[in-house]
Length: 221
Image 1 (cartoon, one colour):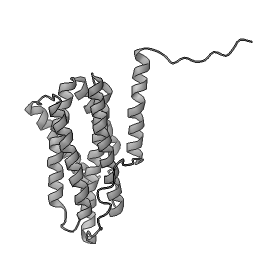
Image 2 (cartoon, one colour):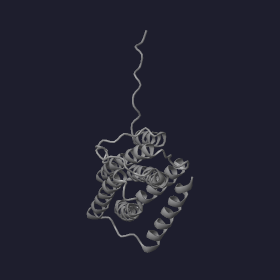
Image 3 (cartoon, helix red, strand yellow):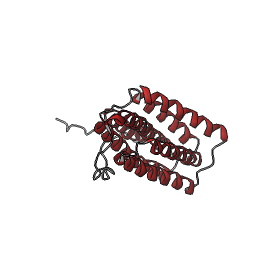
Image 4 (cartoon, one colour):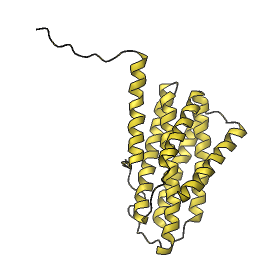
């Protein structure tokens, strides 16, 4: 009786594409299932939760918006990494995505502490952002890095706005948002230093408009 043949792994481009699709698919499932864990300590871990009961609903809404933004960030980086033209660009996107995974876990934890919920449209934010990230990546690594730089610039401005809206007695949320802002600023700076190209004014405006739509929608749904 002949020995059973051992299946061989398909070779060539087709296998590589399938192999590269597994990681973003796994990340999408983790992100949307809420099964996300931080690799870094929770920034608010040692801070007493003194936010007033009357402020908790509004702070939870702010963190729901930030959580939706982090869902989108996961998808953007995964989409860009999937189609990146160089191994270095792909590694950079995935490294930044790991920071965003920490942010997502922190936002989720703070929402639970506040008794809040995530946006019901998270799957929509993920799918749309993944497509946008892939389109940016297909335009080339310089454009993709420029997209990161502009995105993070707008995110930092958004976080600063949320910090101004926090009640003065919410040091826990403040610590989280400060650390997120520092990380986002670093991602944008690194993208520019790596040769990210300046996006045209119409692209920057379209990004701001899309962010406003998501922000206002996630606040309510």
